[in-house]
Image 1: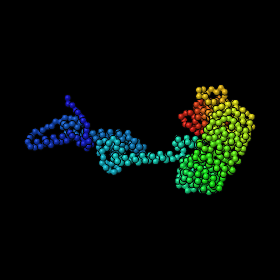
Image 2 (image 1 turned 180 degrees about the vertical axis):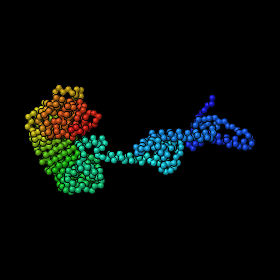
Image 3 (image 1 turned 135 degrees about the horizontal axis):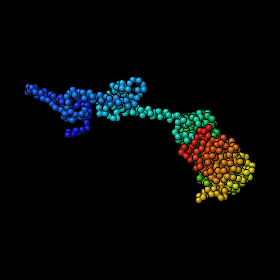
Image 4 (image 1 turned 90 degrees about the vertical axis):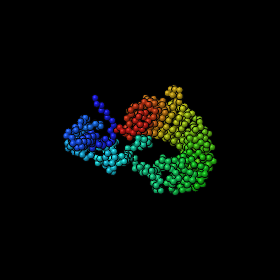
Amino acid sequence: MERRIRGPQSALTDYLASQNISASRIRADYEARRAAAANAAANSATTATTTAQHVDDDDEDDEAGPSAAELARRAQERKRKKQAEAIAKIKKSKAFKKRKLADDDDDDKLALSMLKEGYLTALPGQTENCEECGKRFTVTAYTRAGPKGGLLCPKCASKLADKEKAAKQNSKKKETAVPTRGGRRKMQSRLLDGQIGVKSLMTLCVETLANNVSLADSLGDLPPTAVDRIARQISKRRLLDSNTLKLFLQPQAEKITLYDAARLTQADYINIFAVCSQLKHLKVRCAIQFRDSVMDYLIGRNFALESISLSGANLLTDDSWRRFLEDKGKALKSLRVYFTDRYFGDEVVGWLKHCCPDLDTLKICHNQQVSDDGLEYVAGLDKLQRLGLHLVKPTSTMPYVHIIEKIGTNLRTLSLRMVPDVDDRFLDALHAHCTQLKKLRITDSEVMTDAGFTRLFLDWKNKRLTHLDLEKCRYVNSEKPRDNPHMVGLCSNGFEAMMVHSGASLQKLNLHGCRHISREAFERIFSVGQVYPSLEDLEISFCEQVTDFIVGSIFRCCPKLRRLNVFGCMKLRDVRVPKGKILVGMPNAIGMVIEGTDD
């Protein structure tokens, strides 16, 4: 039995096959010529007959093939077969389907016309001319088709791919340029800033100016509110330096507010006081380089500040503060000092009574030097109306009680942060002496009890509060945090008494961490028929008894509520947020900030 072994075909064999040239035919022609020559030389009457073995159409072995006529017939059949396969492949292609939609011809005619146009005529291994540059190249399985139906060489195909990629990137940039299609992170940031819906025209103008602040020469005659918004936006982007500071310096300016002055030098502060000769109000955050030399220059100027607010001015010594208060203190009405560690201690607070007779606002926050002795000096400021204290040193109850007993009748705003050792005696003093408070803050209390808060709000002669912050007034026990046998902190009774007294006028309420308020108390306060018309911002994070029903009741009872914080309320599952409201801190995968869409 004859064995037929086939091996891999070379590129030359493929090329000869595409031109209808086979090895069998070449061998047959050679044998015919040799036989004719032999007959002519011998004048033989006999004709040599040649026998040849019949092989299949695709066999390319070395034996003699059939006659020329038979080979021609087989070549035609092979050509028709390849044409039929090519037509079938064309019918399955996307190009054929697109042509079919625009042309009503028969499928076979359409496929045949596409075949004649050159579609799929070249197979892998064959050579073809590039549609673009005309260069001849070898076709592979990865050869791309050109826009006109031909094939492209690797170089032209790479150029076409680059163009398509650039066009795709441009289309993506156009889509992301639309404000409503911003990234999720940007949208969440806008919601955290309290911005709902489309930005106002002023906001867009301020952001455009901040993006091109290097091109601005002056802010002109913009109103103070617009200038303040520009200052906030520039500070937010850390763009405030010696160059951009000049935009806010005008000889007629009476108020300068710098929200991030970390990049300013001593010369910049001196320049502020040199240019702004009518300055009355100064507020600087991150005032790192506000040193004694700057204070000396300010003391030497012929204007007196009515309010000064410095944050982070750690390099100002007590002697500089003394000289400033002695020379400029008579006109001073507001003094705010934040984040001081080595200076501004009890002695400086003691000078306030004699140097600042008209002082009505005092705020000392994150201070590491003021103690109980300094608080006794505060009690001597008779005209004080707004007081804010956040002291690092431990303090006791009685200095705060003395402050309330002496100046409590005039206080409109009182803020005490981090007072873990102040007890119910302070709350009783508030109930007895304060009658004009509008804003009250007491945070991080660990000994005040629910009974003390209840006594404070029951039959209190003070006007209704507009802002109330009782953050982290709760019982602290690491072993049994939920057990509260002595009802320490703000609990259910104090919460209900508070809402009865001031609920109708409250605009902002902070109950962060008051975890001992019961579910029943929340449901009674926010029950059907209760309305709190002024409440706009409510913080109930880590109040563990808050449920979906309570949150829904809050939205129903507070028509003006814009923002509700519910961090740590693990009983929340699925809350429907009304349109125009913001729910922050939901413990799910939807997002930290949810903007309401329900009508």
